[in-house]
Image (cartoon, rainbow, N blue to C red; front, side):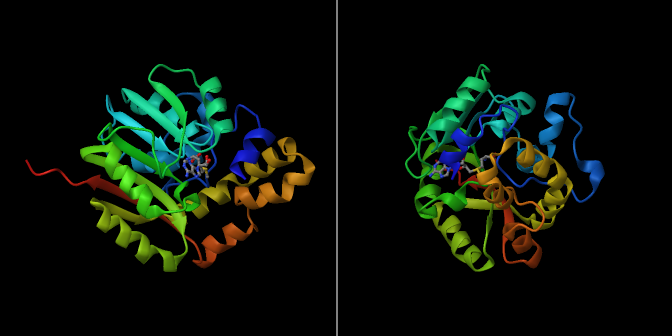
Length: 251
Ligand SMILES: C[S@@+](CC[C@H](N)C(=O)[O-])C[C@H]1O[C@@H](n2cnc3c(N)ncnc32)[C@H](O)[C@@H]1O
């Protein structure tokens, strides 16, 4: 699906593929100095609710599953890491990102979350937003995160799961050598974002998506009445968020 989307939608302004996050107290949603960024506010907030938890300035950051590059480019712009590498399975997305975002210290690379093309201990922070539900083995993914993170480095992770899958996921996390510092169920924030963004998502689909793909895109975008929207509402899908840290090597 993601591979196909890279070809179907080449629109430059479509830079995120996630359900978004809205703070339950509106006053906490940030105000962007840049008007261009306003439209993607809710999708960006899925990143900031993680990124504001740690210090990113001058750090070396890896985003796994960087998609169309919106999150990576905004983190680079507003959080000022020294270097940010976006890794994605989709060659079409990676090409699109390298064409659209030409910023020093920001680069996009094609690769697999379960077999990352980086040497050991090469990043201070790994970010992973709404991507891991696509992976074949979470055990392999967590092992790769542990490999590429420096001792004491942070892993910022958010995605949705069925309730019965969470216990197994957390067992893998604790077996991997990652320590959970903070865990949140952000399902209400995601539902609120989908409510707030419904009209904009529908308008984009009606204007930009070829007719034969519209139904599929409505489902994919999580607009009201889509299956995924209803699953969030009924608690059949939970959206979770974790701040984790690679345990510090004893000296
Ligand atoms: C729902 S999109 C999220 C993109 C981005 N994080 C965002 O929030 O806009 C999921 C992304 O994960 C990527 N992905 C799926 N499986 C992957 C894998 N095994 N390795 C790397 N990326 C993968 C997809 O190509 C897609 O770009």
